[in-house]
Image (tube, rainbow, N blue to C red; front, side, top):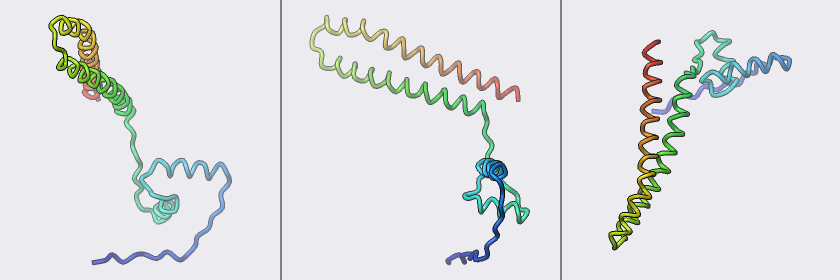
Length: 130
């Protein structure tokens, strides 16, 4: 069954100065309203306005995790290429050399894993305090 669409054919014009417009627009941007008209109707009809809430610590955590994820992906890609190279080696000395060279890559990977654990512990402790 189709929903009946509400036709809005009446105009309500208001004039504001530049500072008022900027203030109204800034407040509107913090809401979930799709347009400034929708926001104005909601306010004028005294309906509740849903404001977006940003958690600064969660934003910082997410930013750190994205950076660490990208670094881990790069390390993982390098490691996969190295393992592929290992599969095509046919002599023991080459394998020993490969193991020595890629030990640093393994250490780098483990360092990033420890960073992730430390960041998660720090955020966990922060959230427990609230």
